[in-house]
Length: 245
Image (cartoon, rainbow, N blue to C red; front, side, top):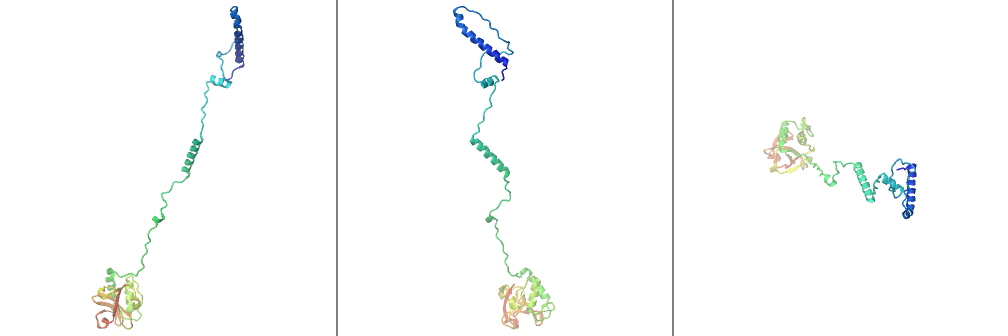
């Protein structure tokens, strides 16, 4: 708080008068009491406190103004470090992307066994053997043509190749080659649709027909496509074996 010049003059006069009065008290006590009227030099505009404040000017002003100093907040290094760490964590939480639900799976768990289809020759099932036999019998009467493989004429292996091809099964061209495909079948295990082989004009499999059951087979012989018997005089001792493609 600022003190005006008039106030400072009044305070100085009052202080001087008090000092003079204090110095004259011993003399007055020895003789007689004399009342000395003291008149202020000038009328103060404001009534000041008689008590003379002590302390520095700054402290006096603060006490008169009832000034309360703001508390000094001392921030320790640990709290500062904690706040920096918290801010860093907050920034990291914002900056880092949320992991996607498509998490990377383990290479071991993600591997699945690869199924490799077995490359094997298609076999005639018993469900379509009757269809195959019916087709073979439908060609009965087609003439024999050496090297023929169509309805205009067949030889033995051309006939079997044509019938099986109609059922979706591919066979080699010659009887010797057809004897090497499929599974070997004993005579007692023969079923309709099996291939039966004979050794006729050459060693090995030189003639082939399609078994139709009951000890019979259909073939393309010199008389054309016809039905023959495994127990006939000609084929009984020429029978070589059977295959199931």
